[in-house]
Length: 488
Image (cartoon, rainbow, N blue to C red; front, side):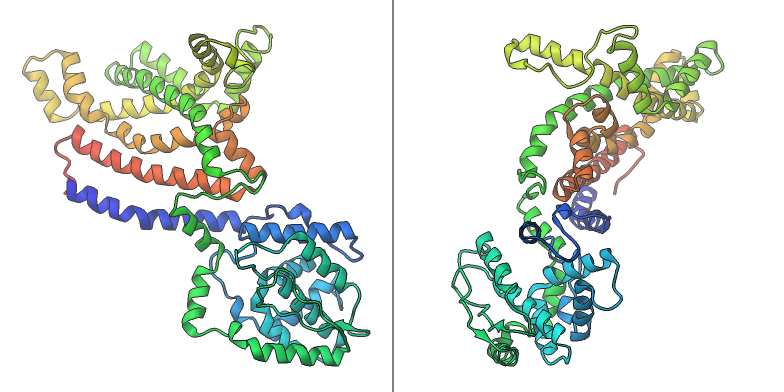
C-alpha cells in the first residue's frame, strides 16, 4: 500500500500542473479582459482617455496581462506583421472594425521589446505615416524602461511622453530617439530633428543596442515557454502566492482564508447530516424492497433529487423567512449585523439559526443522491454468497446486514468521498448566492463576474488539488473497507 501511495503522490504535481494549465487557458481565452473598461477606442481621444489607456497599460503590466497566455511567439514577429497591426490600429485603409482596431492596439502595446526590430525595419517604408507610427512605437518602448529597483516609471513620465507625441509627425518635426537601456528614471529629452535625421539616429541607436533585441535559439526557446502569463503564475504559485485581486488589489490567499469558515461550516454540517440520514435510509430501502415504506421513501427522495437547489432555497426563503406565511428564519447571511455584541453562546446560536435554511437546502439534494447509492450498494451485496453463508450460520438479519453486507455495500459511498474535500473548500455557489452567505461559492461567483482571474484560479486550483487528495483517500478507504481489494 505504501508503494502505491508514494506513486500516487509523485503523479500529483504533474497532474495538478496540467489541470491548472487547462483552467488557466480557458479563463484567459474567455471573452473580456480584467480592467478592459479603461480602454477608449476610436479617434479624437481626450486627455482623460489617454490617461485611462496609460493607466490600463500599467495595470496589465502589473498583473502580466501584457504577456502571451501559454506560448510566446512574439520574437518571431516580422516587419510585415507589425505593418498590418499599425494599419489596423490607426484605422488606415478600409479598416472600420472597432474590435479589430482595439486588438491591434493591444498587441502593439503589449509586445514591447519584441517590436523594436520590426519597427526599425519599417523606418525604410515609403509611406511616411508608417514611419511616423513606427517612431511613435519606439518612443513608447523607451518610456517603458525599468529603474534599477525594478519599479515601473511613474504615471507623470508616461503622461509627459503622451504630451510630447502630440507635437510631431513625420510631415513636420519629430524627436530623436531616447535611450531605452538607461538607468535614468526619465528618458533624456531629445532635440527637434527632421524626419530623415531622426530615422538615421534611430538606426544608429539600434546598431549600438542590437544585442538587446536579437536572441539565440536557446534564449528564444526559453522565452517561448517562460515569458508568459502561465509561467509567471506558476512561479508565484510555487511560493504559495496566489497573486493579487485584479479588482481591489487585495491578497487572494488572505481573502480565501477569510472565506473558508463560512463554506466549511455550511458544507461540513450539510454533508454530515446527509450521510447520517442517507446511509440508514438506503439500507432500509434495500432490505425492505417492495414495502410501502420503501415506496414512500423512494418517491420522496426522487422529488427532492429533481428539485434544483436554487428553487428549493427560494421556496424556503419565501415560505419561512419573508412572512408568507411565516417569518421564522433570517432572509440570508451568515450571522446578524452586530455579532460582536453577542456572547459566544449567543453568537453560536445566531449562526446556527442563520444556517437552518441553507443547510436544509444543501442536505435535501445531497441526501437524495447518497441514499440511492447506499441502496444500490446494499442490494448488490446482500445477494452475495458470503451473506447467505452468514444467514445459514444463524446470525440475526440486522447483524448480517450491518456487519457483513453494510461494510462492503458502502463502497459506492466511499467513491463519493473523493469529491467531499473540494466541496468543503469551494462551497456551493448556488446556495451561497441565494442565501447571501459570504463564503467561497459567493466569492467565486463574484470573481467570475468581475473577471478576477487570480481569484478564480486560486479557488479552482485549490479545489483541483483537494480533488486529487480526495481520490487518493477514497482508494485507500477501499482497501480498508474490503480486504479483498489490493492496492499493490
